[in-house]
Image (cartoon, rainbow, N blue to C red):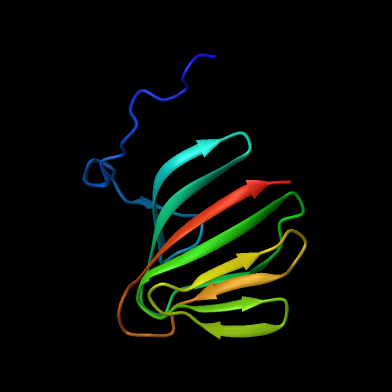
Length: 112
């Protein structure tokens, strides 16, 4: 089987922040495959990613820094460094940063 990757280590400092689809969310994509991916997401102060669902994938979030608020299936959670959240497929979810400082979150997805 041929290796799909040129390198085994991703140098995060070599990656540029890319503006996401929603204002206030920037990302550095680590890996994107047909069955899922992982990216580092910077959430600017007071940014809101609206409520949405994914019928075909499960997402997860690992909080690196800050205190983002997660809405998952009618429940609210305030994240802190080291917290891990799961957004199952077909479940409403959103992310907010209701603070005056940036939040940093590792976001991943696995296609069902």
